[in-house]
Length: 262
Image (tube, rainbow, N blue to C red):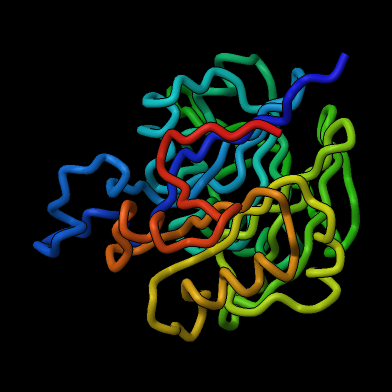
């Protein structure tokens, strides 16, 4: 029986989140809940498999808010603080599931994750409570399986960082998730042709040296041609309602708590 491939946006904000500390702009002071953005992360459900892509510093709050009770694997796009610093909270899922949880990343990202979380894997002393994870390096542009999902790590340019997005496939449906990106190489764009759903970085209206702006994201999404696409990793320059009105058909603004199914 065919079951949906489901993605929940746990967070859709940039590294500072929205509202930003100490900011009194219209978006940061907005009463519209769509303008409250935790750091970017998603939760994917495919059959009995549950995945988290990036564990933001808000991961504990995200897990509580959206009722997460199972994590079968963590995937990292890159090693910036806003994408990895919630990894320590995976230890609660170790207890809930009585299991070691695999963590997947390309080699450069994994090296930085292991440096930041150097205490993981050390001998545990009585009273200490550490995440129990299995670090697994993923070759770029290779496909690997996690439960019922096939996953391919595809490279993008995001400043000097070694960054990937992921293409997830389940029962013939495919989702592309690329939250941090300034330029997408042609082989990556070609690999994403025919995806059912595409999620892409869109920082602000003005160009940025390491992120896509609104116009760049729209052009890239139209070239990929997914039936439905969502913009994420949004800063406080972007008001949800205004941006939603401006977008072409088939391209939408993601928000925290949004659930999409394909």
